Length: 375
Ligand SMILES: Nc1ncnc2c1ncn2[C@@H]1O[C@H](COP(=O)(O)OP(=O)(O)OP(=O)(O)O)[C@@H](O)[C@H]1O
Ligand SMILES: [Mg+2]
Image (tube, rainbow, N blue to C red):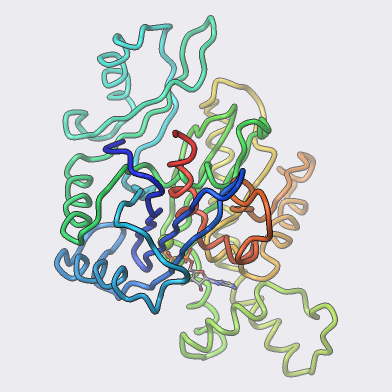
């Protein structure tokens, strides 16, 4: 959804537990990051992407912008590009016969109605033709409850923000991490946050399908807290330090106590990571078996992880190892890697923070990048 065109709007990634802001500027032939912020949200404002306390959320958003101590760099203006969370955006590619653009206006909602679990009249439906062939059109649709969008827009407006556009967060993540011109192979992106992990299936140069589960970094911290009998702050520290390590860290001499801690952390994390792995595998199998893209056989060849939880030390290596040890997947040569949210942004000079740190800002960076893609 596109409302007005104002230069360099701020990418604003609002979720249950944090607000992240990113602003980009043109610099020479490329772009630079001129300001960013990551502010945690107190509980009770948003839950499972639903607004629980509207007034408090408006106040908090105002404070996020006025409290300059939490900003790196200086934000200009109050124009934003915002995202619709995976749980609220129904995203799918549908096949249609070769129609004229004016015919699509009526055909898309009628066709979309078959796939959308809610009455089409209550949904805001956006679409984009992603492929044309003799067989017809492939159309990427996003459907979101109108009431949800209206509520979100009114919150932003009351917080003094001007919404330039709002889009599915999966679209922002794909914009940040992939390059269409590279013709990426079939890819599954895992966006792992604190309360939620989203799965984005990208095949044949388009998002095909997305889903999400309420399991991510918090579940890992809780598992460590429980197993090692620690409070959440201590467990969080241990999680970030050891991650899902092998028993000795490279270059580190390990005392017997540390070795015990490391193995206890692995024991705590494995059940949660196994669940995540199973969900990931089911997502890939569901997609491939239902032939959702119209292609047959195995299509996913790459897995890219992003979001704060993807910074867990050794996570990509761990997932790669699980794939190699899995009879169903081991022969397919699926590659697991960390997302690089700088690849479409910084074209000259070093980025202001590492590729690893940028994993937390993937959605916000993708939202801010939208302005430069459509201009
Ligand atoms: N170095 C690290 N190692 C492991 N986990 C980390 C690391 N840094 C951050 N995390 C985890 O990342 C999560 C926060 O990620 P992110 O900022 O993407 O989510 P959020 O926006 O706060 O949550 P949500 O989107 O679910 O509301 C937390 O669970 C945190 O523990
Ligand atoms: Mg978030």
